[in-house]
Length: 292
Image (tube, rainbow, N blue to C red; front, top):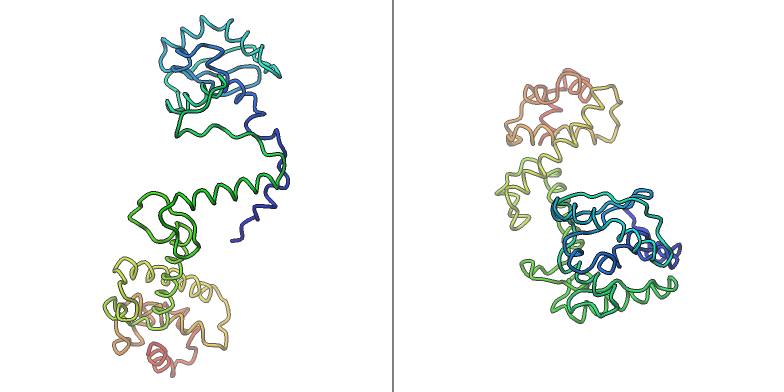
């Protein structure tokens, strides 16, 4: 899957399209000034539906308190720069979403004071894409400087302990994907190998990994065999016979020398067996040779 380049993603961005231009954000940023710091601790603008502002409160008692303050609240909202068209208030008890630190950051920012240490105030919108990219580079540089370790694959800074992982999440996921592909490929080429035998080829292979790869291959081979059952022609390359052999061995869990024509026919069904080995007289020999 290809990701959209960051430069292309921000080329269509322009100042004023972010949260600062959102009417609900403007109300939230000045909420403490409109209702007072004490009331702001127990309430929060939640949504703006047309001309109705939905306010979350800590309890039904606080909803009643704000209902009494409705005229004052509406006048305060109307006095905001670029006045927000709010005509009615609605309340929802017990719906507060923000944490105390987020509420404190908003109140400090609205009052024109510095945000408390450890709480980042929303930055001013970037003037253009170049400035936005520059900010991103500076942030990544700062993260690398603060981090005590980096991903051994891509060099991305690693934060927190997380079991002292040596790779970032994307690189760890890619490593796991490559490992599973190796397990699946090995099982496909030698489907008679047991878990213990396969660990000699792939160190530290767990039983769960082995069973997962086995199930994936069985499901994949079943789709191939089902197409043959539905009437698809068998190619001359012999790939379908190799798939059928792998399927029989993985499903039966038997070594190759114990696979008989009856086991093959029981695992694949008559339609698939006859399509893969149409010559009745050669069916038994062909089945035994393919699984070996």
